[in-house]
Picture 1 (tube, each protein chain N blue to C red):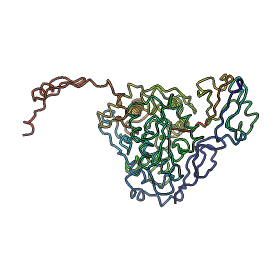
Picture 2: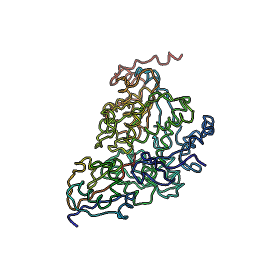
Picture 3: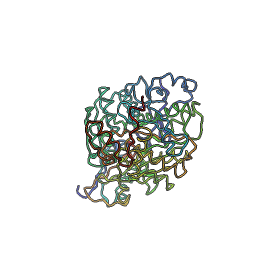
Picture 4: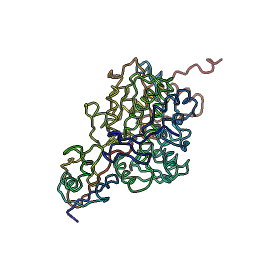
Amino acid sequence: MADTITVRIPTALRPQVENQESIAIAGASVKQVLGVLTTRYPELGKRLYKKENELNRFINVYINDEDIRFLENLETPVKGGDELSIVPAIAGG
Amino acid sequence: MSFVKALRCKECGADYGIEPRTVCDSDFGPVEVAFDYEAMKGKVTRASIAAGPQSLWRYRDLLPIEGEPKAGLNSGWTPLVRAKRLAAELGVKELYIKDDSVNYPTFSYKDRVVAVALTKAMEFGFDTVGCASTGNLAHSVAAHAAAAGVRACVMIPHDLEAGKMVGMTVFGPRVVRIRGNYDDVNRLCSQIADKYKWAIVNVNLRPYYTEGAKTHGFEIAEQLGWRLPQHTVVPVAGGTILPKIWKAYQEFITLGLVQDNKPRMYGAQAQGCNPVVKAIQEGQDLFHPQKPNTIAKSIAIGNPADGYYVIKVVNESGGYGASATDPEIIDAIKLLARTEGIFTEPAGGTTLACAIKLIQSGRIPKDESICVSITGNGLKTLEVMQGQFEEVPVIGAKLSDFDAAMNEPTPGNAPWKAAEPAAARA
């Protein structure tokens, strides 16, 4: 679907989204896409956000493999065909 | 029988069983190994530790393994050097270098974490181990895996130093070079760990791996005669080692093995990649990730997993942070080599350069005990020293040529005065 964003879900969050690996969602910004996602799956929302408009600091969000903190954070615009990955922050070192 | 209680979320305290796991299911906070210190009391003593092997496994009661160690049997127990000549140069009273540049078998602090992670991987029954690495970790994983007869797949950024490439490839792992920086490699590794059933030592075995870093701190304390340095300066890359040295100090205090002298921890980063130090200096709890640009590639991590905990420990201990420019890093490498005979890589140069800044700015008092953690070896990163020394001229094989050469000034030096040759000995 050309006008939807593919959201990649890490294993640890799949129980909250009926075990889907990826979900197609329409939206114009990261915030909108995650908004649709968390409305549909409220349990996921609880883990994704620390509070409104503030992501859990242990979760990183990438648009096409770029960390949104290098873009415009939640306001980062997205377009159809983009891939949004949710990745646990704790790794490496 | 071990003293391990559980894997515990550092944020919410939720407990999990001893399994391959990185984060807590409910808040994604890191899980950490929790030990039963009460049960250790009277059993884990100075004497019991001192009776152990001359390796990091002398601290096995404080490490998360269940059976016998299966890897890194000779890793750790590196020298703690009383750096008198460097101390004199810096005008400080008591200075130590904890020298992991000569760790076994691959000359970096990473041999500690891998010894524990590989043992754990084998306990869990994995047949393949992997890592996201800036080089040193890949060396260590590949070497330990080769020695243990386990398959290794190491993931690295595409632009590592030539010596770093050879130093891993020689052990025969599958090497995957990834277009991007370490943080890109790391993100990919998290996704790989999700999909492939491998033991990625710094992803799904991370809680066990990081405990291995404590041994650097245990050794400092034991080698100092069962006391803690008042100030410890540590490089910050992913942020594993600094909080774990702190944990080591606290564990020894809890067990009554050392006195609590309120040790302070200091983070060192390269100016071209200093998200954690910047946050410390600006009084922020959270760091902002950076795109690294520094010769200190082994610590060029712009989005450090444990950055938050480094900031927390540094602040809690009353320490601070400093960052060093590339020329300052090179100067510090030379200074350490010239005064103490230790050749470290840019990460070590960074740590020493930052220690010097912290001393000169008065953050670290000159009359108190200071330990600088040197975590890697300069022979792996020779190209950063290119152009640092003038080419050495070739002379004829005659004594008269040698005499003439000794009367030539060398760059930065007066001519060597021919020091009374045979006559002085007679």
